[in-house]
Image (cartoon, rainbow, N blue to C red; front, side, top):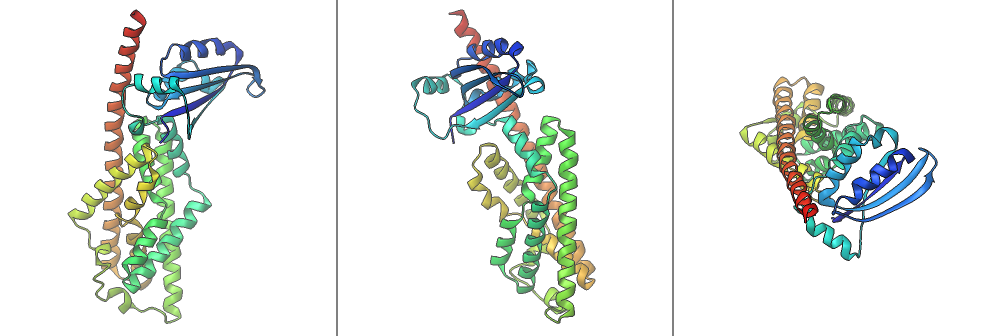
Length: 322
Protein backbone atom coordinates (compact mmCIF):
# COMPACT_ATOMS: atom_id res chain seq x y z
CA UNK A 1 0.00 0.00 0.00
CA UNK A 2 1.55 3.24 -1.13
CA UNK A 3 1.24 6.11 1.34
CA UNK A 4 1.88 8.62 -1.46
CA UNK A 5 -0.06 9.07 -4.67
CA UNK A 6 1.05 10.95 -7.76
CA UNK A 7 -1.52 13.25 -9.31
CA UNK A 8 -0.78 14.24 -12.90
CA UNK A 9 -2.90 17.10 -14.23
CA UNK A 10 -3.26 18.29 -17.82
CA UNK A 11 -4.45 21.84 -17.26
CA UNK A 12 -5.51 24.58 -19.67
CA UNK A 13 -3.19 27.58 -19.19
CA UNK A 14 -6.08 29.67 -17.89
CA UNK A 15 -6.59 27.26 -14.97
CA UNK A 16 -2.97 26.44 -14.14
CA UNK A 17 -2.56 29.31 -11.70
CA UNK A 18 -5.62 28.23 -9.71
CA UNK A 19 -4.41 24.63 -9.74
CA UNK A 20 -1.00 25.65 -8.38
CA UNK A 21 -2.62 27.81 -5.70
CA UNK A 22 -4.83 24.91 -4.63
CA UNK A 23 -1.93 22.48 -4.39
CA UNK A 24 0.57 24.81 -2.70
CA UNK A 25 -2.02 25.65 -0.03
CA UNK A 26 -2.26 22.00 1.04
CA UNK A 27 0.46 20.79 3.41
CA UNK A 28 -0.25 17.20 2.34
CA UNK A 29 1.28 18.00 -1.07
CA UNK A 30 4.98 17.23 -0.64
CA UNK A 31 6.14 17.74 -4.24
CA UNK A 32 4.90 19.99 -7.02
CA UNK A 33 6.24 20.60 -10.51
CA UNK A 34 4.91 22.40 -13.58
CA UNK A 35 5.82 21.96 -17.23
CA UNK A 36 4.54 24.90 -19.23
CA UNK A 37 3.00 24.18 -22.64
CA UNK A 38 3.84 20.49 -22.25
CA UNK A 39 0.32 19.28 -23.00
CA UNK A 40 -0.85 19.18 -26.62
CA UNK A 41 -4.27 17.63 -26.02
CA UNK A 42 -5.74 19.28 -24.07
CA UNK A 43 -3.61 22.29 -24.91
CA UNK A 44 -1.93 23.73 -21.85
CA UNK A 45 0.37 22.77 -19.00
CA UNK A 46 1.23 19.60 -17.11
CA UNK A 47 1.22 19.75 -13.31
CA UNK A 48 2.55 16.84 -11.26
CA UNK A 49 2.05 16.60 -7.49
CA UNK A 50 2.92 14.02 -4.82
CA UNK A 51 0.09 13.86 -2.28
CA UNK A 52 -0.34 11.91 0.95
CA UNK A 53 -2.95 9.25 0.26
CA UNK A 54 -5.09 10.46 3.17
CA UNK A 55 -5.50 13.88 1.50
CA UNK A 56 -6.15 12.73 -2.06
CA UNK A 57 -9.94 13.00 -1.90
CA UNK A 58 -9.78 16.61 -0.75
CA UNK A 59 -7.32 17.51 -3.51
CA UNK A 60 -9.43 15.80 -6.18
CA UNK A 61 -12.61 17.52 -4.96
CA UNK A 62 -10.79 20.86 -5.14
CA UNK A 63 -9.78 20.13 -8.74
CA UNK A 64 -13.37 19.19 -9.55
CA UNK A 65 -14.58 22.54 -8.24
CA UNK A 66 -12.11 24.26 -10.56
CA UNK A 67 -13.63 22.40 -13.50
CA UNK A 68 -10.48 20.43 -14.30
CA UNK A 69 -12.25 17.21 -15.39
CA UNK A 70 -14.24 19.17 -17.99
CA UNK A 71 -11.39 21.33 -19.27
CA UNK A 72 -8.42 19.00 -18.80
CA UNK A 73 -7.69 15.69 -17.07
CA UNK A 74 -6.59 14.30 -13.71
CA UNK A 75 -4.59 11.07 -13.46
CA UNK A 76 -4.04 9.36 -10.10
CA UNK A 77 -1.54 6.57 -9.58
CA UNK A 78 0.26 5.02 -6.60
CA UNK A 79 3.97 5.49 -6.04
CA UNK A 80 5.35 1.97 -5.39
CA UNK A 81 8.43 3.18 -3.49
CA UNK A 82 9.50 6.61 -2.40
CA UNK A 83 12.25 8.23 -0.32
CA UNK A 84 11.34 11.71 0.83
CA UNK A 85 11.48 13.47 4.17
CA UNK A 86 8.93 15.96 2.89
CA UNK A 87 6.64 13.12 1.82
CA UNK A 88 6.91 11.52 5.25
CA UNK A 89 6.14 14.83 6.93
CA UNK A 90 3.12 15.37 4.69
CA UNK A 91 1.84 11.90 5.54
CA UNK A 92 2.21 12.57 9.26
CA UNK A 93 0.34 15.87 8.99
CA UNK A 94 -2.63 14.27 7.23
CA UNK A 95 -4.97 12.65 9.78
CA UNK A 96 -5.97 9.03 9.36
CA UNK A 97 -4.10 6.05 7.98
CA UNK A 98 -3.03 5.65 4.38
CA UNK A 99 -3.86 1.95 4.53
CA UNK A 100 -7.47 2.77 5.48
CA UNK A 101 -7.98 5.62 3.04
CA UNK A 102 -10.70 5.28 0.43
CA UNK A 103 -9.68 7.12 -2.73
CA UNK A 104 -13.13 7.62 -4.20
CA UNK A 105 -11.96 8.45 -7.71
CA UNK A 106 -10.11 5.12 -7.86
CA UNK A 107 -13.00 3.15 -6.33
CA UNK A 108 -15.53 4.69 -8.72
CA UNK A 109 -13.35 4.08 -11.78
CA UNK A 110 -12.87 0.45 -10.77
CA UNK A 111 -16.61 0.07 -10.22
CA UNK A 112 -17.34 1.21 -13.77
CA UNK A 113 -14.77 -1.25 -15.13
CA UNK A 114 -16.08 -4.17 -13.05
CA UNK A 115 -19.70 -3.43 -13.99
CA UNK A 116 -19.08 -3.44 -17.74
CA UNK A 117 -20.86 -6.13 -19.73
CA UNK A 118 -18.10 -7.49 -21.94
CA UNK A 119 -16.92 -10.72 -23.50
CA UNK A 120 -14.49 -11.48 -20.68
CA UNK A 121 -17.13 -11.10 -17.97
CA UNK A 122 -19.67 -13.27 -19.80
CA UNK A 123 -17.04 -15.89 -20.63
CA UNK A 124 -15.76 -16.14 -17.05
CA UNK A 125 -19.22 -16.36 -15.50
CA UNK A 126 -20.24 -19.01 -18.05
CA UNK A 127 -17.12 -21.12 -17.46
CA UNK A 128 -17.47 -20.75 -13.70
CA UNK A 129 -21.13 -21.79 -13.81
CA UNK A 130 -20.38 -24.84 -15.95
CA UNK A 131 -17.56 -25.85 -13.62
CA UNK A 132 -19.92 -25.48 -10.67
CA UNK A 133 -22.44 -27.69 -12.49
CA UNK A 134 -19.82 -30.44 -12.76
CA UNK A 135 -18.97 -29.92 -9.08
CA UNK A 136 -22.61 -30.46 -8.12
CA UNK A 137 -22.90 -33.66 -10.14
CA UNK A 138 -19.67 -35.02 -8.65
CA UNK A 139 -20.49 -33.59 -5.19
CA UNK A 140 -17.03 -32.05 -5.13
CA UNK A 141 -16.30 -29.18 -2.74
CA UNK A 142 -12.92 -28.62 -4.41
CA UNK A 143 -14.55 -27.91 -7.76
CA UNK A 144 -17.17 -25.69 -6.10
CA UNK A 145 -14.38 -23.59 -4.61
CA UNK A 146 -12.66 -23.41 -7.98
CA UNK A 147 -15.87 -22.20 -9.63
CA UNK A 148 -16.35 -19.55 -6.93
CA UNK A 149 -12.84 -18.21 -7.45
CA UNK A 150 -13.29 -17.96 -11.23
CA UNK A 151 -16.63 -16.14 -10.95
CA UNK A 152 -16.30 -12.39 -11.73
CA UNK A 153 -19.62 -11.26 -10.24
CA UNK A 154 -18.37 -9.67 -7.00
CA UNK A 155 -17.05 -6.55 -8.70
CA UNK A 156 -20.41 -5.84 -10.31
CA UNK A 157 -22.22 -6.45 -7.01
CA UNK A 158 -19.85 -4.09 -5.18
CA UNK A 159 -20.48 -1.51 -7.90
CA UNK A 160 -24.14 -1.40 -6.81
CA UNK A 161 -23.06 -0.01 -3.43
CA UNK A 162 -20.64 2.46 -5.02
CA UNK A 163 -23.40 3.70 -7.33
CA UNK A 164 -25.80 4.34 -4.44
CA UNK A 165 -23.25 5.97 -2.14
CA UNK A 166 -21.77 8.23 -4.83
CA UNK A 167 -25.08 9.00 -6.55
CA UNK A 168 -24.03 7.40 -9.86
CA UNK A 169 -27.38 6.05 -11.05
CA UNK A 170 -26.03 5.32 -14.50
CA UNK A 171 -23.54 2.98 -12.82
CA UNK A 172 -26.39 1.42 -10.85
CA UNK A 173 -28.26 0.55 -14.03
CA UNK A 174 -25.08 -0.70 -15.68
CA UNK A 175 -24.31 -2.99 -12.72
CA UNK A 176 -27.82 -4.44 -12.66
CA UNK A 177 -27.77 -5.10 -16.39
CA UNK A 178 -24.36 -6.76 -16.17
CA UNK A 179 -25.43 -9.04 -13.31
CA UNK A 180 -28.70 -10.02 -15.00
CA UNK A 181 -27.00 -10.63 -18.33
CA UNK A 182 -24.11 -12.50 -16.73
CA UNK A 183 -26.22 -14.91 -14.70
CA UNK A 184 -28.67 -15.37 -17.58
CA UNK A 185 -25.87 -16.28 -20.00
CA UNK A 186 -24.12 -18.49 -17.43
CA UNK A 187 -27.33 -20.38 -16.61
CA UNK A 188 -28.25 -20.70 -20.29
CA UNK A 189 -24.83 -22.05 -21.29
CA UNK A 190 -24.79 -24.51 -18.39
CA UNK A 191 -28.35 -25.65 -19.19
CA UNK A 192 -27.34 -26.35 -22.79
CA UNK A 193 -24.21 -28.22 -21.64
CA UNK A 194 -26.30 -30.28 -19.19
CA UNK A 195 -28.81 -31.16 -21.92
CA UNK A 196 -25.98 -32.28 -24.20
CA UNK A 197 -24.46 -34.40 -21.40
CA UNK A 198 -27.89 -35.84 -20.65
CA UNK A 199 -28.38 -36.74 -24.32
CA UNK A 200 -24.99 -38.46 -24.38
CA UNK A 201 -25.90 -40.44 -21.29
CA UNK A 202 -23.16 -38.89 -19.18
CA UNK A 203 -25.54 -37.65 -16.49
CA UNK A 204 -29.00 -38.59 -15.34
CA UNK A 205 -31.66 -37.10 -13.08
CA UNK A 206 -30.35 -39.33 -10.29
CA UNK A 207 -27.05 -37.45 -10.37
CA UNK A 208 -28.88 -34.23 -9.62
CA UNK A 209 -31.45 -35.49 -7.10
CA UNK A 210 -29.23 -37.91 -5.17
CA UNK A 211 -28.00 -36.97 -1.71
CA UNK A 212 -25.07 -34.58 -1.97
CA UNK A 213 -23.71 -34.02 1.55
CA UNK A 214 -20.83 -31.82 0.37
CA UNK A 215 -22.85 -29.52 -1.90
CA UNK A 216 -26.41 -29.62 -0.49
CA UNK A 217 -25.96 -26.10 0.90
CA UNK A 218 -26.18 -24.76 -2.65
CA UNK A 219 -29.95 -25.28 -2.92
CA UNK A 220 -30.97 -25.10 0.77
CA UNK A 221 -30.76 -21.40 1.72
CA UNK A 222 -31.23 -20.34 5.33
CA UNK A 223 -30.36 -17.44 7.63
CA UNK A 224 -26.70 -18.40 7.55
CA UNK A 225 -26.58 -17.94 3.78
CA UNK A 226 -27.61 -14.32 4.21
CA UNK A 227 -25.28 -13.72 7.17
CA UNK A 228 -22.30 -15.19 5.30
CA UNK A 229 -23.09 -12.96 2.31
CA UNK A 230 -23.18 -9.89 4.57
CA UNK A 231 -19.87 -10.66 6.25
CA UNK A 232 -18.09 -11.71 3.06
CA UNK A 233 -19.22 -8.65 1.12
CA UNK A 234 -18.20 -6.27 3.91
CA UNK A 235 -14.74 -7.86 3.93
CA UNK A 236 -14.59 -7.73 0.14
CA UNK A 237 -15.49 -4.04 -0.06
CA UNK A 238 -12.89 -3.21 2.59
CA UNK A 239 -10.32 -5.12 0.56
CA UNK A 240 -11.27 -3.32 -2.65
CA UNK A 241 -11.31 0.17 -1.19
CA UNK A 242 -7.96 -0.30 0.53
CA UNK A 243 -6.49 -1.99 -2.58
CA UNK A 244 -5.86 -5.15 -0.56
CA UNK A 245 -7.13 -7.33 -3.40
CA UNK A 246 -5.19 -10.31 -2.10
CA UNK A 247 -7.89 -10.75 0.52
CA UNK A 248 -10.63 -11.15 -2.08
CA UNK A 249 -10.13 -14.88 -2.65
CA UNK A 250 -11.69 -15.51 0.75
CA UNK A 251 -14.78 -13.59 -0.36
CA UNK A 252 -15.10 -15.55 -3.59
CA UNK A 253 -15.12 -18.92 -1.82
CA UNK A 254 -17.57 -17.83 0.88
CA UNK A 255 -20.66 -16.92 -1.10
CA UNK A 256 -22.46 -19.45 -3.31
CA UNK A 257 -23.73 -17.25 -6.13
CA UNK A 258 -22.11 -19.18 -8.98
CA UNK A 259 -22.93 -22.67 -7.60
CA UNK A 260 -26.56 -21.60 -7.05
CA UNK A 261 -26.77 -20.42 -10.66
CA UNK A 262 -25.31 -23.75 -11.80
CA UNK A 263 -27.91 -25.69 -9.83
CA UNK A 264 -30.65 -23.59 -11.42
CA UNK A 265 -29.30 -24.69 -14.80
CA UNK A 266 -29.27 -28.36 -13.81
CA UNK A 267 -32.83 -28.01 -12.52
CA UNK A 268 -33.90 -26.50 -15.84
CA UNK A 269 -32.19 -29.26 -17.81
CA UNK A 270 -34.05 -31.97 -15.87
CA UNK A 271 -37.28 -30.10 -15.07
CA UNK A 272 -36.72 -30.16 -11.28
CA UNK A 273 -38.82 -27.37 -9.79
CA UNK A 274 -37.56 -27.81 -6.23
CA UNK A 275 -33.95 -27.50 -7.31
CA UNK A 276 -34.73 -24.42 -9.40
CA UNK A 277 -36.67 -22.70 -6.61
CA UNK A 278 -34.19 -23.45 -3.82
CA UNK A 279 -31.19 -22.41 -5.89
CA UNK A 280 -32.88 -19.24 -7.18
CA UNK A 281 -33.69 -18.24 -3.61
CA UNK A 282 -30.08 -18.93 -2.60
CA UNK A 283 -28.83 -16.79 -5.49
CA UNK A 284 -31.16 -13.89 -4.67
CA UNK A 285 -30.32 -14.03 -0.95
CA UNK A 286 -26.60 -13.99 -1.66
CA UNK A 287 -26.70 -11.12 -4.16
CA UNK A 288 -29.05 -9.06 -1.95
CA UNK A 289 -26.93 -9.67 1.15
CA UNK A 290 -23.70 -8.75 -0.65
CA UNK A 291 -25.19 -5.62 -2.18
CA UNK A 292 -26.61 -4.50 1.17
CA UNK A 293 -23.38 -5.14 3.07
CA UNK A 294 -21.33 -3.40 0.38
CA UNK A 295 -23.57 -0.34 0.52
CA UNK A 296 -23.49 -0.14 4.33
CA UNK A 297 -19.70 -0.53 4.40
CA UNK A 298 -19.23 2.24 1.85
CA UNK A 299 -21.66 4.54 3.68
CA UNK A 300 -19.68 4.09 6.90
CA UNK A 301 -16.42 4.75 5.08
CA UNK A 302 -17.81 7.87 3.42
CA UNK A 303 -19.02 9.27 6.75
CA UNK A 304 -15.70 8.52 8.44
CA UNK A 305 -13.60 10.11 5.70
CA UNK A 306 -15.88 13.11 5.49
CA UNK A 307 -15.17 13.77 9.15
CA UNK A 308 -11.46 13.27 8.57
CA UNK A 309 -11.59 15.79 5.72
CA UNK A 310 -13.30 18.29 8.01
CA UNK A 311 -10.61 17.66 10.61
CA UNK A 312 -7.90 18.32 7.98
CA UNK A 313 -9.58 21.59 7.06
CA UNK A 314 -9.62 22.72 10.70
CA UNK A 315 -5.96 21.77 11.13
CA UNK A 316 -5.04 23.67 7.96
CA UNK A 317 -6.83 26.80 9.17
CA UNK A 318 -5.01 26.65 12.50
CA UNK A 319 -1.65 26.22 10.77
CA UNK A 320 -2.28 29.21 8.48
CA UNK A 321 -3.09 31.43 11.49
CA UNK A 322 0.28 30.72 13.10
